[in-house]
Image 1: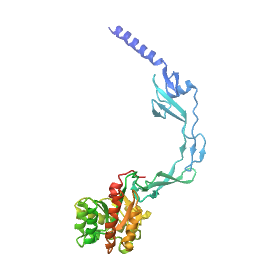
Image 2: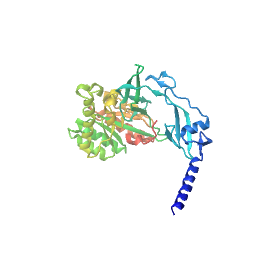
Image 3: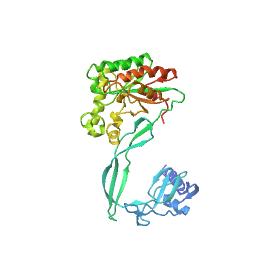
Image 4: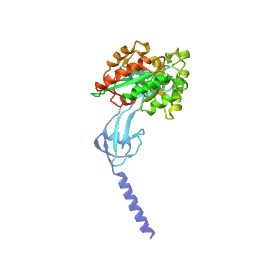
Length: 373
């Protein structure tokens, strides 16, 4: 029995040794190669005759400190990176091997923020605010071997984009009427009456502190209920440090408060979330303002036609401006900021005439449903 077991063991051992002595048939850089010996990556290199060239040791600024002192080779086995020449290979393995890459010298690094900025493009009256303002990272490295100092941006900043676009309305004869600086007592109601009698929709850029007094909330609520778009024109038209005309004169905190309080006033009046469409006081929207309030808004709206009603030039002069409108135009008017009786009279004349020419009057949201470019 013992003799029989010994014979079997010897046969098995012999078979194992025989199998282990067989070469590994691999694919190396696209060619079939038999690997003998220990069947390692080094053996494969020896069998193929390939001699990878080592990379260089680089200073932190990319200059060569020592040629040939970088990575000795680059290799993958079945897609996985391998750095050890003693890696065992088996039949069927797919090996790619080539020259080594550079190694950068050891260094100390000090990181600094790379501030994000606002990029602008286009000339349209609709100013889309896109992206996320986020600082990047810059590393200043000092090499241990070379003593060289070099800067490298390790994370690019994510900039905020202001795209100034125009709606492509095609053959649709649509105009966006916009009214600023209200609500303003009964004259806002009279504007709403004229719009209703002409089946017109408009966008009201309201001032928050006007909503909170003189029964302003009721007019805002009515405008929303009748299908008009209600947006903010800031909380108090940049009064105080903004000189009632420019958010850019205010601190970043004050700018943010103008927007947030403007939204809150609309939401208190309507009971619904405020539109993130905004018009800046005076139309002043500098880069610093975009940086501060950009995350709070979807778009800032300019205009193509200034009706000039704020100058009170007489109803006919306002009518003349309105009659010069074209498909896709955004018209600036006012229901607040003072006596707007001329504006109301002009609307009574101009809207029926424009309707006779086939025009419809839409909100900014409706206008932005068209392709924007």
